[in-house]
Length: 354
Ligand code: GLY
Image 1 (cartoon, rainbow, N blue to C red):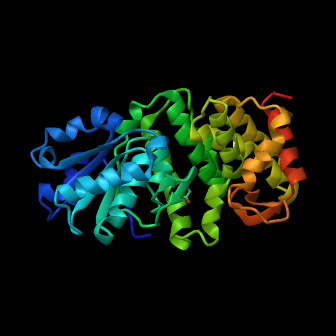
Image 2: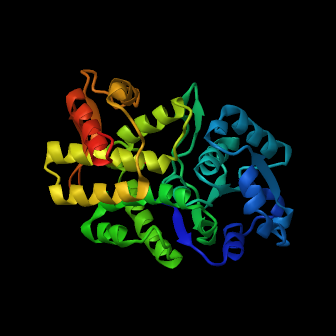
Image 3: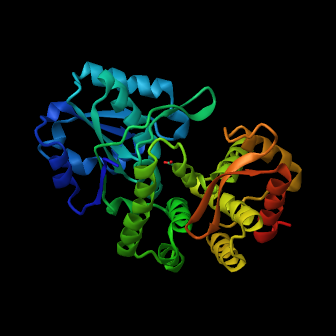
């Protein structure tokens, strides 16, 4: 993957290097309302970054829209951006997804750098080149795969995240642990989410990102192996959509963590994933993520939501990425409705709802 990913203590200095050879008026910051307030000020004191154009969009996934995208293109155009300009996306996954798409398409593509400000963004969205917007009621419906020049991570941003946002990001690290190897999985299990050691978190983050980088390197366009990054997401997205519909949205990582409980069960039932590892993993998820309360009368609806997730076999079976063991993956496993409903039963029993 042609994308440099690194953690820095000298964010401004390193970003200056990323801008080398460019004048301040050909560099653009993309921020949302939150990162403008919380993350941008330290750049504004700098004599170079103090002079770059700042483009602001509204925060949150419901603004990952064509309108926001058009407003970014308009600002780039009005402020004389060229194909040689550089966009710096300062924010979570919504900013890096939309900003990456704006940069990739403006004048047929200018370079961009991602500076993720959330753990979830750093471990997932900022890395691997997926960019895009939501459209026609569907998430990430329009976009391109085009990697940023670099991903520059400053772990200081994570110190200001609250416990739930940290856990939301950590869920993707749990996923990377499960799909990689026993060593990384051990590290993931031994990290104390109650008393965060931020230096250790940075080490684990780099290790976790390298899991994703290796997958993306082999299969950047998700023809095969990259589907493993969807582990936990088929059921997880259904939980996430259901929570949204009931007016009680949940953080993405929480939905993925709960989805992993069901998908680990399917891995155990269909591929012989070891029972002890299943128990360890679900206990850890339960202890740290609690539960989304669901009743069995919404199983059919959850199943319907899963069939809309583009992984439909056409005969009622849905394609999953599952595990035979830690790091032993199998993609495109067709799973019957009955097994999916059983996995929801398992979820409810495990988290104490049944
Ligand atoms: N978020 C999964 C991927 O980048 O493929």
